[in-house]
Length: 428
Ligand code: G3I
Image (cartoon, rainbow, N blue to C red):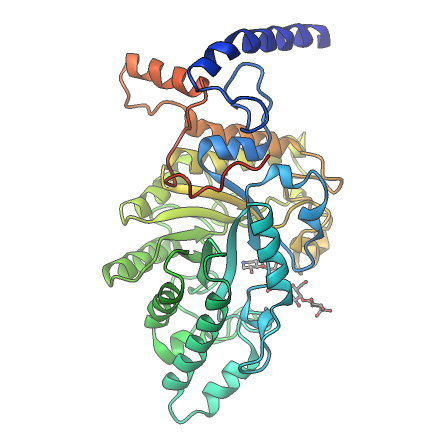
C-alpha cells in the first residue's frame, strides 16, 4: 500500500515538474524560494501559513507574554498572524493611574514586526476584573468620583491614547472592546455573575462606552483595523446571544462608529456541540455573512478544541480534526471571514490546563501542534479547510468554474479578503 502511495506521489510530483515551466511562463507559478508553494499544484504539501497566504485567510495563534513558543525554530513557519494573549490587557500594562510597564507588549510587537506576522493587540477595554481586564484603581477612582461618568471617560481616554499612540503604525488590529455582553445571556453584566464583576463601563456610561473606545482608538491610529470581540457560544441566527451581538454591531455601524469587524472567540471549553459550540459549518457561515451585510469582517479569534471532550470517539485526534474542519470550513465559505486564530500556539502551553474547571481534564491538548510542535491531524484538516476558499463559487456557470479552477491550480490567489498588500509580503 505504501508503495502505491509512493508511486502516486511520484507521478503527482512529475506532473508538477512538467507543468512548472508552463506555469512559470504564465507568471502564475512561484519561482523557487521567493514565494510560497502553490497549495493547489499537483504534489503540493503546504504548511498552514502557505495555505493561509493562498486562501487569503490569516492563521494565527495567541502568544503569551513570555514569547518562547513562536521563537522555537520552525513554529513560525505555521502561522502568518499572532495575537497578544495578555500583554495588551489593561491589567497587564498598568496597576496605577498613569504608570505603565510596556516590557512584554514591546517584546511581542517587535517580534511580530521582525517576523512580518499580522499583529492583533488584545484588548484595550475589558470589564472583567481579576482577569487582567480592568485594574482595581479604575474601579476605585470611579467609585469615589463626584462625577463617575466624567472620571471613567477620562481614565479610558488616557489609557487608550497612551497605549495606541505608543504602537501607532505597528499594530495591525485591536480588539478594542472584549466581551461586552454577559457570559451566557444577551444583556450586559449589570451585577456580578459567575464570579465576574458587573460591567463598570456599561453601568457608568451605558452602551456608548463602546462607541467612545472605538472613536478614541481610531483617532490615534486610523490605519489599525478595529474589532469587537465576543464569546458567542453557538453562533447562528436565532441564538439569543448571537442575535444580540449582531444587533449590537448593527447599532454601532448605524451610529457611524469606526468598527472594521467582529471576533467570535469559539472556545470549546464547555462543549463541542450546540448550544456551547458551532453545530455545523453552514449555520456558522450564514451568521458570518450577516456581518458582511453590515460591511464588517468576521474573524475566529480564540479557537481551541479540548481533546478530553472527544474521549468517547474511536479516534479522538481524528474527531478533533473534524471539529476544526467544521469551524474553519465556515470561515472559508464566508468571504468576509478573514482569519482563524487558535488560543495559544501548541498543546504544551494551553490556558485550559491552568484554569478551573478544564484544568481538571489536563492535558487538554486542544491545538494544532502537539507539545513537541508536531502537526496533528487537526493541522492538516485546518489547512485543507482553508483551501476550500479556492473552490469555485457554486453560482458560477460551468465553463467559468473550469477557468476558475484552472487559474487557482496555476497559483492565482483565492480571495481578496484583504486588498494586497495588507497581508505582509511573504516571509521566506
Ligand atoms: O503572570 C502572572 C504570574 O506572575 C503570577 O504568579 C500568576 C499567579 O497569580 O498569575 C500570572 O498572570 C496570569 C496570566 O494569565 C498569565 O498566566 C493571570 O493571573 C491570569 O488571570 C491570566 O489568565 C488569562 C485570562 O485570559 C485572564 O486574563 C489567560 O492566560 C488567557 O489565556 C485568558 O484569555 C482569555 C481572553 O483574554 C479573552 N477570551 C477568553 C480567554 C480565555 O479565558
